[in-house]
Length: 156
Image 1 (tube, rainbow, N blue to C red):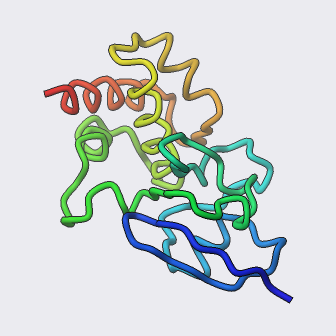
Image 2 (image 1 turned 90 degrees about the horizontal axis):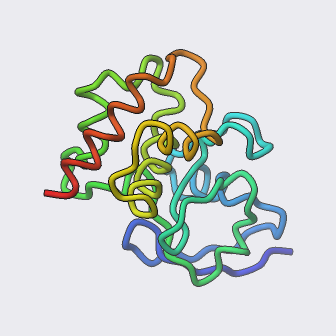
């Protein structure tokens, strides 16, 4: 037996009948086809599944879809609905803040939350605030540069 849920995802109202055990990450990927939100560890350790719930970054593998009832969710796909790149996405591209790209959607979503909570963050603060997002390819140097460049572009 399922539970009826309704929420706004990337500015669009959605509703579905879901198993009460359905994780938000699975709802987004399977029910809505928003595969930019990645499943990395299933234990909220890697940050690949980071989305914004009511304006705050959360790890979608650690939240049930029913807990998002009535919420506003933004995924990586919702950052730039016109098809272009959000300034933070462009900064990750320009600064080579990615290699394989698996962690990138979660990194970008976490970076946006970081910039909102810590405008003008220095390198140390950025590294500390991104601690919950793991990248297995880079040394984080270019990720930090990307967050700084993205924050500057967003401030304009």
